[in-house]
Length: 453
Image 1 (cartoon, helix red, strand yellow):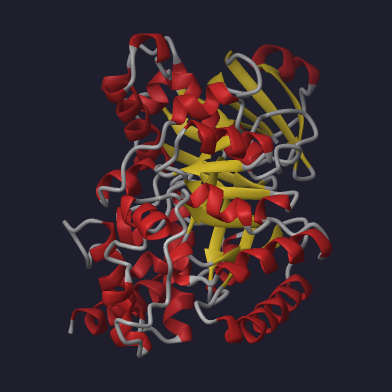
Image 2 (tube, helix red, strand yellow):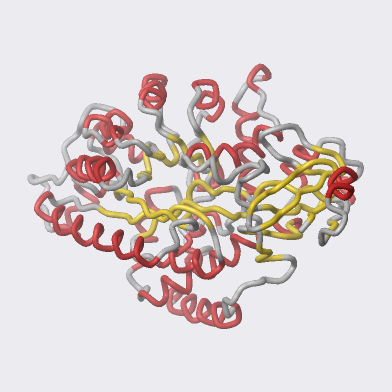
């Protein structure tokens, strides 16, 4: 199939005006101007998207698809309060609820032009949802315990799941990784065990939430925050004279470093908002990828990650949409726009991020952060044909001289004309897969009634 549009944006090289991409066998076979490719392949089936941009499908460096049905329930509170309320809501979900919630998220993902995800899950629901709609990506099985004597059992259960998920998944579509739970819910031996497992078990990829909020920073360094003993003693049965946590005196980044997790060969750290220059140096030294989530961080008053500092330091960095329970919508276009504006508002003219920078972060940058840039993230020959078409014909976009800028500043999820994964169109105004959408929506309504009561 020959895809044609006013612009083709390879990301790895400058955009092509009046561009075309040849797709065969699920791969990108050729790319260039429409005139050249039409001449070169005169008998090829052609699809012309007109005044639009063809570009790589978005690579979402951090998702929680299974939380999609929890959106809009907890509003206008900062991170710690949001987390506590969310934990209470989670208790109402059954396994079927998690699976249907993740399916809702997967439907939104392909509609918004995301073709690859890196999802942290405790239930496995996101793996099933990703397979149902054909998404590429990494599914991280979450594991953790605050109790040292529970760690072996937690790891046995987690590694059994990882083995089962690998056996049931197509390795060319999904990779299975491991993710320690949040720092304030884990005994430090968890991080040691995760690092050891990742090194010895087929170089398993690792994801972890790290330095995401001031509350987490103060808990790790000083032992005092909303996550401190007073907030945990009732649920865990501790007296105030027997705290489950002692202050470490170091930043979250250096705390995890002390337990050897960064020795694993493929680690992505999510958020990294509360970091200093030394933390960034350590992330670079250990070649840690970083997934920045601007909307979640802003909405929950977590702070703003020093994105420009990450880029200047040479870190592999990309963008994630995080939990729909925090952001209400899995939308990489909104993520890029807000991320760009926040960095400009807090930065200087000498450190000015551009639309081209943000498009790269949402595609090839995220792929690099996840160590999958040899497969996805740009429109290069022999890469997987994960391609989207973004409409640029709206009045606010005409005339368009810089398609990257137009995409970041003016496009919305409604601008996605087509989503192709592995050479197959899964969305083009209608969903082109076998998910029963009406059933999923009906189930979500049932869940919402339960959650509101």
